[in-house]
Length: 110
Length: 115
Image 1: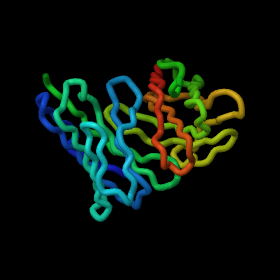
Image 2 (image 1 turned 120 degrees about the vertical axis):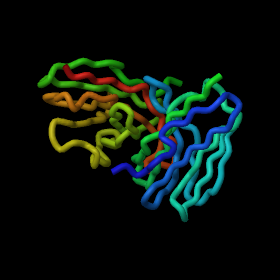
Image 3 (image 1 turned 90 degrees about the vertical axis):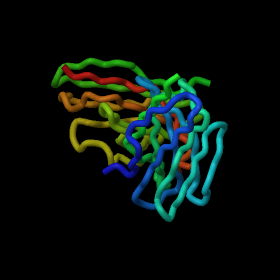
Image 4 (image 1 turned 180 degrees about the horizontal axis):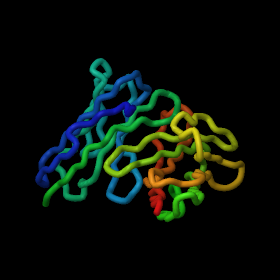
């Protein structure tokens, strides 16, 4: 079964607003990664956060990790129409393979 | 540097035929992963290969599916005697390390349609 569960499944916001997506997982992890997928394309890596890290930033992206609750969140600040995409969390447990969540479909309206 | 290259981008097969999907990893990467994505779903791991070795095939169906990553040339995912349920997008990713401590870089996928 899929390791990660994400919510919401779909999120629609106006340009300039912040978008928050959450991810929960079930087993221990080495790291957690967030990816973005535009329609018809492959996945683009956004951020990797290790199990001993609690927060990480990259530009307008902020990722948090709470290993006690087995959850992570991705915050996109000041969203743009170009941020419209599906966002996936994926967990890694030192074996190389990634276990993906079902994804959040983000729509940013101009 | 070229990214992960997959071909073909679209592949149409009739039931019972064979499908061959190719993946060339990023330059310098020796670790290749194959994932399958059904419509409206996340990616599901299929197999992890390093040059000439299968490291983890826990996500591969027991029959009809095979994968290889030869010393020379691209990685190949082969599906024999395809059925309608094989219709999906198949993504290849590569990385530079074995332990998953580096991000995986994905190709744009092969969309397989079974008539």
